[in-house]
Image (cartoon, rainbow, N blue to C red; front, side, top):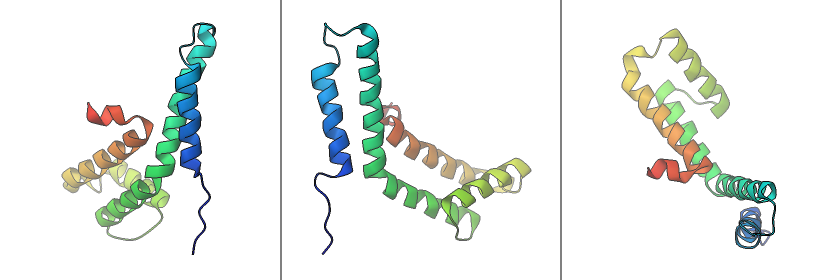
Length: 121
């Protein structure tokens, strides 16, 4: 049996973000600078929450895509660096469509964490 702490880190981040959004952002008595920074904090907390909840699955999928494209196993960072070198040196030029699909999916995954509205647009 695995004991998971409750609330989870993602739930704590979500709760703080909801508090800031509901009780702090947009309050008339707050100076504009403080209100702006509260909105920035809400956005950052949203990114952290999505990273905690979506990150592991997105990272595993990224690694799988890179392994399939490059034809061997490895750590995600090393595979990403290898892909970048291959793009720079032209060794994957004949597989441009595959490379483009992998890179697009990588960017989509990053946007899902950074700002999902960009993916919906």
